[in-house]
Image (cartoon, rainbow, N blue to C red; front, top):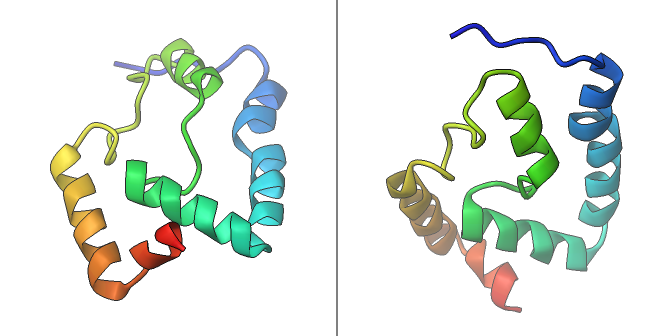
Length: 95
């Protein structure tokens, strides 16, 4: 299935690119930000939550609403959690 290009590439970059990355990088600079990111990774396998706008944009482009990652492959999410526990990263979440 061929994906279609969004009507406004600027809108795509605003949703996916620079703005969200800028906001997330600011959060990462704080201890609380690291806890949030570690919590997101432990819960979903992603450092940044997938928002409804992105899901809708993916649908507009002819893609499944969720990316083929730990959101779809729950066995992979279990592996992420095992790695986080073994390396001690999951402890950041519970601090």
